[in-house]
Length: 228
Image (tube, rainbow, N blue to C red; front, side, top):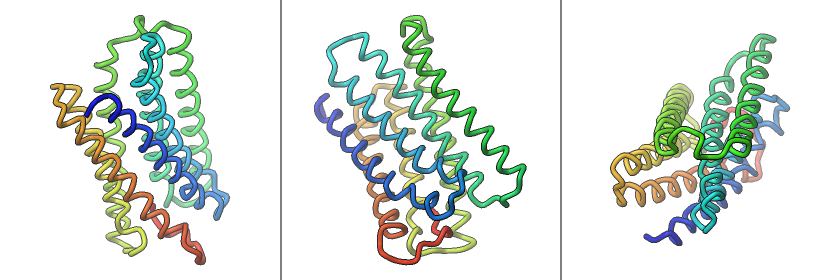
């Protein structure tokens, strides 16, 4: 699998992710609750991170490549953080303290994302810590966030099974494994681990798309209990 194959993988991942955003925005539209805005935002940032990596892989400008790679890891980390925070608050009682805490965390994530972008563009990439080291740490956090969501959705379905979204936990499990496989590649440059990461990621996004269509795409009376 050459660079062209990886570029196609990133573009395909971005296309699937942006298709998901169309469905992921439904819980927010149905309820008007701001805490569900993190679901489409998380997947949108995930899609943007794939675009950044596709740009880095296809560019011949070294400075642009460095900027895109840094933007990719920052954006992807915030995507997983948005998703984890959204699921954390999704079933909590709608009390004033809950709303305030969500707004604070949401604001922190937005400020953190903007600040990371400013760091990349204001400070030359060579002044930042080792990209490889930072990437490995961020992937570790991504694995933790994806694993948390996997456990959360598994427990949610165990207590109240829903056949329409029963595969949602599998999507997050695969997403966590994709990050783990990428981490293995970063540690030992195993090409099979990198190729596996792309395959697992695309599979997870297809699972999400299938589940999202069943939960929110088919004409029916939508219910918030569908756990995507």
